Length: 249
Image (tube, rainbow, N blue to C red; front, side, top):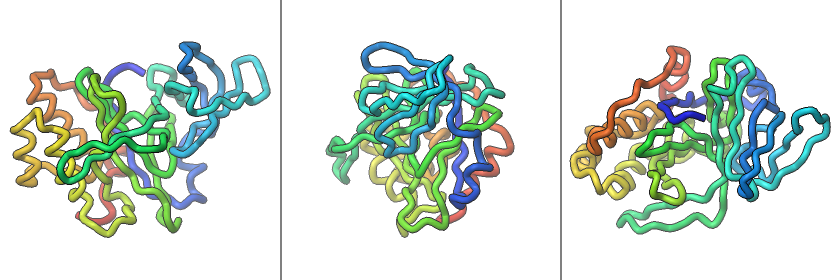
């Protein structure tokens, strides 16, 4: 997938409605293996905790199971959108920050979907699962009627960082009964310590992160701080409607 500013839509849906929200699974795509090989075919879009990726190689009719730990990343696309609008997912561990900014590496790995890919930073999201749509957009979702359904979390990664860092919680159907921005206010100043102007805005609550649009705005401010040219965001009115928060303002 080309570097760019690609916002995800965030969905809160009943599990019974998932088949009507996105493209059929599997999708056309490529699997980039850690050994450097690339495998093409129909790919089952993994959920965050998927341990194996199902691939039906091009020209074959049998599914091959690939261990997630052996995959570097995958690209999948809706056939109506084409490969140029592929969505990228990667299986990775992540870093968590405490109140003092100390880093702790996660003990497990999960599949994350790429939201934004820019030369100076990349953004990812996790939820209960992922959908890819005919217009090339992608969604991460969580079920409103499922007890214990995963929350939607955001992660950031600079080019010199080995893995993404958990940075904020979406307020879309969050099961944590706390103001969603509490997490960004706690972790943001540590992560963006190389940009004092942005840190000040975070501490003063001039900027918050509770939705993917708010995260995109913060990424642009960070780019301004680093002298990066602003890309043109690519969103549509349909995606913007889906991003309206449903809980905790």
